[in-house]
Image (cartoon, rainbow, N blue to C red):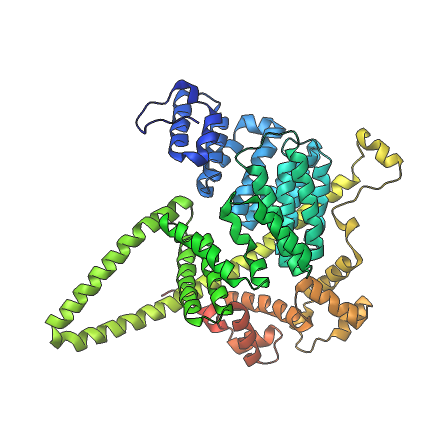
Length: 567
């Protein structure tokens, strides 16, 4: 590594895009300085400079700033003319919107990548698009279909010679591990972990270890195996994996918190407290006090002390945790990591200002005692007004969330329909010569569209179409028997179908349809009374309508409608 004083001119040997990437994590300011020199000298084509600078910001969590350069590179004629460059750039857009949790924009770029990859016969990019599609479907609560798409994407990536093949497989398996553990699918998670270890082992063969990377990956896999085996009740095997984890030592100890659930299962509460206290002290020493790592530490310490029945200490940490969570929510609302940093820097100043104001108020109260009553009355009035405004702001925010969710659902349905149509057309197109052998062997290539839909998929789609098309949900007396007769299925099959695909029971499914319809009436028909809206939406009485609406949206129908009234 090169080391230079802050004001020392950079030697020409450092003015390359390779050194931008090298200094990204170790010396971000120097990486920016090199980037400025590259632009000043026009050392690379403009689109390449945009890609490098976008990567600089993306790799340091500044996703909005990265998008600025990624979008400009994507519009470049040079990128558009090169299919490989174009798909790589679309992949960068997908990754950025994935990190920003903007699912609608991400879906649009996934569709673009899938379409282009199929046109070019690029299996690695098709795999990337398919895996991201599976993630989106999973988070829309169609978990079965989501897992199916993600596993197909993995199989597709396995059969490529992509230079980043093992990096992608690592990411894919780690993502599956998280989801499977969240869904308590520990047997499947154990198999996925075996596959991940196989990928890591293959990738590391014949390569030079970089900065303890091999030990770091081994340590992470050992902790995953320990936790999964513990959850499966295979404690001897879990203990063996834990000892293997311990044997690696202090390599990359930042992620040691991952072992905490196992220690809690083993009731090693003092060990939990010892580990977390050390990490807590480290974060305080480095002034990294508002972070997800600190949140995990506070929660673990609170849980450990609670299990030890030291409730006073537990309460202290849970109080700190509540304050920390509120602080993190404030940070999450900012549009970029740079804005987050500014908020953090000004936080201490804001506290000082508030303290000064509090002292001034106290002095004024003492000096002007006769105005105390008026001051308190004014303060009470201000708090009431602020509270009312806060309620209005909250209701407006919730209303926007409701509207955006409905709009997003419509857009996503359209995008999924377009993707299905695209896949169907691709399936119907002639089979390339290179796949001739496969065709001759009698194997039929799977279609990602309707041809591969299971019987349950089609049944639920038919059920949903019947309910939506004929607006059966508007009938307050709608019964299961009506739909059972039309679908010709048993009650048990019907109940399982509703639970699997909507995540609720029949009443919840119908009421969700009614609520969507009521939103339309409340928004577009302002002269309708709430009672009329409830009746027209299929609810048997207005009291049920109010209760169900508030449970789902956090406000009453009247409050939702009032958000459209201008002050």
